[in-house]
Image 1 (cartoon, rainbow, N blue to C red):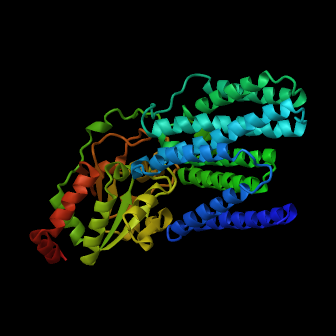
Image 2: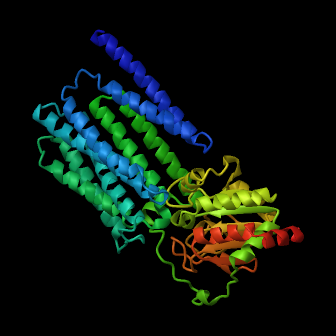
Image 3: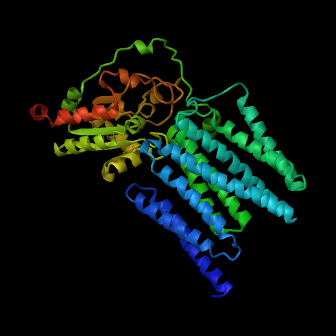
Length: 473
């Protein structure tokens, strides 16, 4: 096969790969088709990589194979992490993608500089790619560190922080402009890289845990954009398209996440949401709460006609999803209509609860989006909240002084009975007290989510509770 025919064939394969990427994004939009989306995305990426090996410009294959081997050694253990570590693993994946883009951009700069091929247009591409890739690298590492609790999860803020951070970014941009006009000032390039890396740290450190789902999707968008710019630098059309798809989908997801929290990008990036809030009432911790035992909870659940389970990060930490599935099966066999209400920002990453419930093989048709769940909540006998705090806080609707006022929440307070499985009365990740816990219809079920649900399951299977539930009906 001559070179022209080989290039034509490669272009056709790239087109099929791009179509596969688009279908992957479409199918990932629904839990029912998500696995198909992952599979077609992997196949498409594999086709693109294999086809790239046929590029006549490639000669040093042993270096590429060595890099692939190192990637496999690092990637396999990262892929075998527990479900609770998926958010930070996702952030690490973003960091590796950003590192690849930044390193290739840096190498292209010095290669073209040595060959005197560094035009103003190409320098613009490289500068943008390296700046975005560098800040995405350190930003993703900081996000992973916060999620893994290696770094403080609360926002780290100081007076004049936003102005200082923006001035640092502005300095990187000014250096980029100088390099575009005078590429011979190559000594400025490493300074620009270091400043961009510093800005990535400054970008994420002031962001609290409550905003982490949005930050992760936003960093994904940045990495996609840097990959698209890298495609222009390398003259790779498939990389341009794949990066653009990644960047645009991450941006759209960030918009959806911000809408779900009733916040703007500027609020997320500069609002320091997630700081511990001091109650103006002073004595909120002194209010009385009603608690219940696993046997009490089992009796209430077995006597109900409809139950809505609201999962949160506490369920993920306790690895309680499989026990929750057992609870679902037992109640369903008893004729109880059990469904799951999913808040779009519950957990530490987009779709976190969907992933956990899918791992436990919870039927997709039993998952309800927030708006549908809220419509059914007044007719629901029991709302069982498992480790969800901020996404069920009624202060978002009633307290204009609350930092989360206006944020859409799952309105569990509208259910006839609310039961909350929680380790203690400590506030959620946003550091905000939840008045839900003090309502007359709320019962607090204190303990580890997995252990408490296990106790409920045991109580439900006990003959006495079953008979009592039947008699109550």
